[in-house]
Image: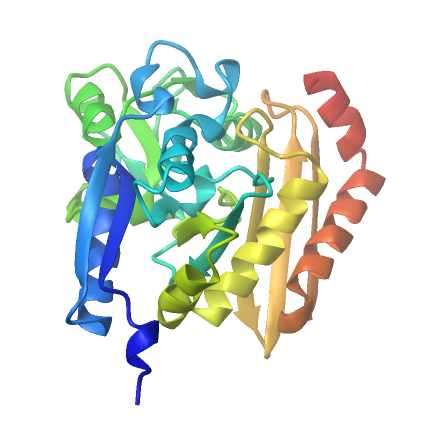
Length: 312
C-alpha cells in the first residue's frame, strides 16, 4: 500500500507553449493523474528564447539550451516542480542544481521525410530544396544526396509544415515522433532508416527534469521511468557529452536494445558532409554511460577531434 506521505497533493509542470510541447506536458499530466488520483496536476506554460528567435539558425544563437533555461528558472523559483522536455533538446551538461529524474518510453526515434511532391529522397531531382533545422541532418543529406539543395528551416512544427505547404521547400525532414504525437503521422512520406539519417541523442524520448535537491519529486516520477529507454538515452548522451556535442555540432548517436544489451551507433561530421567519423559498439545495459564514452573514443581515433576543432 502506498504511504500517504509519499503521494503528492499538487504538481506543477513547466512547459513550452508550442503545440508539441503542450502535448508532451499533457501526456505526462494524464499519466500522473492516473498514478495519483487525489493530486492536482497543473501546467505552467512559458515562452523560451528558443521559441522567440526564429530568424537565425539555432546553432548561431546559443543552441538547444535556449529551450530549457526559462523552465529551469521556474524550477529554481519553485513555481514549478518538474519540467517536461524532448530529450534531444536537453543540453548534455545540466547545472548541478538540476537532475533528469525520469525518461519515459520512447516514441519512434527516426527522422521523417515530409513532402507534397516526392515519395522519398531518392525521388528528388538535382537542385530540389530540402529544409532542416539540424546540422546533423544537413551533414548526412550532403554526404548521401549531394545533388540536393539543403537549406535552414526554423519554427515550431506547424510553422515548418506551413512553409512546406506554401512551396518554400520541396521536402522537409522532421522528427517522426513529433508528427505522430500530434496526430500528423499521415504527413510522413517515409521514415528514414538510421543508416540514412542517424537520429540525435535522445530523439523520440521525453525527459522530466527537477531540482536535484528534491528527492521526493524524483520518487513521484519513478513509476514513469522506462529503464530500457533510459539506458539507450544515457549511452547516446554520453557520446555527445564526451565530444562536447550540441546542436552546433553535426553529431548523431542512436542506441537500441539487442541481445540483452545495447547496440550503439554514432558519428561526427563536417556540416557539408565531406568528412565523417562513424563507429558502432555493443555493451551491457548497465554499462550505458561507459559504452557511450568508449564509442566517443573510437570516433576520436577516426579524427572526430579534428572535425570538431574545424567547427570550433
